[in-house]
Amino acid sequence: MTINFAILGAGRIGQVHARAVAGNENAVLRAVADPMPDAADAIAERYGCDVRTIDQIAGSSDIDAVVICTPTDMHADLIEQFARAKKAIFCEKPIDLDVARVSDCLEVVAAEDGFLMVGFNRRFDPHFMAVRKAIEEGQIGTPEMAIITSRDPGAPPAEYIQRSGGIFRDMTIHDFDMAVFLMGEMPETVQAISSVLTDPAIGPLGDFDTASVIMKMASGKQVTITNSRRASYGYDQRVEVHGSLGMVAAENQRPVSIEIATANGYMRPPLHDFFMTRYIDAYANEIASFVSSLTDGSPANPTGVDGLNALLLADAAVESVRTGASVRVKVG
Image (cartoon, rainbow, N blue to C red; front, side):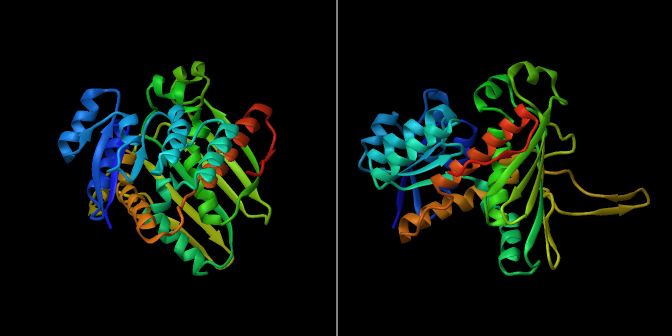
């Protein structure tokens, strides 16, 4: 069975997903939509697909599934439109920046018996998946504490920050989902602190570039997250889970994993420079999972509820920064 795809949004992440779809033997990229003709034409020319409008794609009988890569403020509307059009939907995180809007959107998907998968790509990174497998197999006993480190090489442009919803809803949201993915339960309380340390221009935009979060589950398990918008040494992505019998960790990855030893000491190549190269396997794996679910009838994973839960944690972090107190997480 072959799944016919359309990409909605031909920007940076749209290009990543177009590559993943085109590289899947059970998928065909049929169409792309973007208000910027040059961006849409570039994908169309590279992968041999059509340029169509969003409405044309919704009404196209030769499209089975869409990948939503548009700005966040369009996600919920597009999910509802394509759920009603009976297309399977893969949507980049977050569904929306407002919890109530996400809840309303998920109700529409349920009412239409729609198929929705949310793009938390880090769940599909081979290294993080291996950490999860080690936990599930009991190799470290019962997980008790986790440390998640996520630091970008540099801050995004001002126009992006203004639409992003802030560091917790844009950047840390991946780490919130990873915390649930690794520890197997939703945090009960969130305490967060944040600062502007890397770029003074970010403060007037109402955002932060440095954040730390401590979360506690009902079971007593703890997760610590550290974020920065500036890592001079590359894209810093690590996880560590400590359990009753030991510890499992995923280290930073490099395009080339070698080590050189000379009289000057030990040297290793630099880290990946950003997410498009660091998580290339993860993006391919999540599209492969989406395709497999459609062909074998298995449930979507991550689900819309996973997207809602990550946003609830982000909102709790925002509230904690505002009040300076630990915040109890609302149940999605």
